[in-house]
Length: 488
Image (cartoon, rainbow, N blue to C red; front, side, top):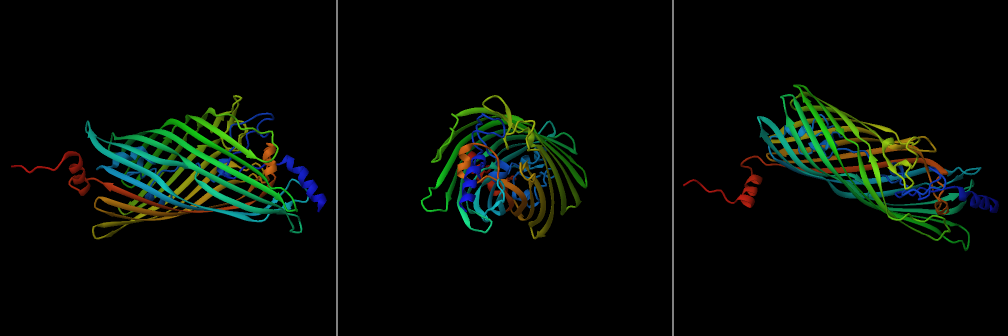
């Protein structure tokens, strides 16, 4: 047993942990020896942050997100700005969501020595609730053409997460050797603030453009502790925290072709260069050559994306829709302090990153029921979302598969929609565990196993139309204009 512990202590100097919910370390031997990098967040794998950019709204969520060729309500611009030209009256909407996350780590072992050392199973859970989307839309006519203008705000990427993973490293007989704990706290998001304009130049053709202001503020703090299970051993701890800010501008270009029994939709989100700044802090009781970089400002290139949608209308009450979207995450790169271009997700040089193209697929359906003067939509959908990064050790890529169901109620000027979405994924992944490894700065994963991810999301949308003579219109008249006067 003493020989095993001595061997284990010696090999730890060559292993590293990429913090769950936090960054890779400031010094990265994966990219270059003797090179400091500004952050090291394996976001798609480690931080449980999905960079899949999906439009907003409970109606679309209930249809699996297949909405590019539909886009006929107040959430239209988040999928296809051209669809706004279908709106006939002013509309305002607000969307909230709640997500429950669970990660199960099973069958993990340390493979940097022979024989491998098993790790006990562990899991993390987390719940979050927040704002998702809000918009206000005004349709109008100009030069005998139908136009619509919208202002909106959307939470595009949510970093919020809190989780603690507690586990033990054992020998082959099951005797516990080391106690490990990982605690991760993240907060903040990247928001888009948008202005959209749509026009219907012909009976079948709708065009739209959106100007997006990207504004991100998020922070993370990750603590990793390790203690040998022998009398008098000291607990080793390594904490890394970082605050981040991102700003940028880009455009969404939309096209919608409408035919009697089907629609074709196209949305292209242009790439852009964002200003990215950060400040890091380090706290550890382990000797380390690492020191946080000073506050840094650099440029992050965000790749463009293409969405193509088809909506089939077998009848006035039944709708089928399908979407395909592609983003090349290998092109999400930033300038390192030494001027080298590295990928955002794995810090590898731009030409050798394991991040790649993601092809998202979404299928959905909507059926309308009528009860008196009320409309009761019923919706269902499916989605498949590959995450940006392939695991460097196992070669697996996390693919999220989701199923959704939604209900709505529309009566007069008010619409309320709800949706429930279940998403899961399973894959062989590598992880980095010991606090002592963090202090070395050598980025090499030395444990692997199976990660099962499950999350449930609930969406709630409220949409208000403001036709002439409706109660909201009369309230606005009273507030901003004053009481109407009857003719004498």
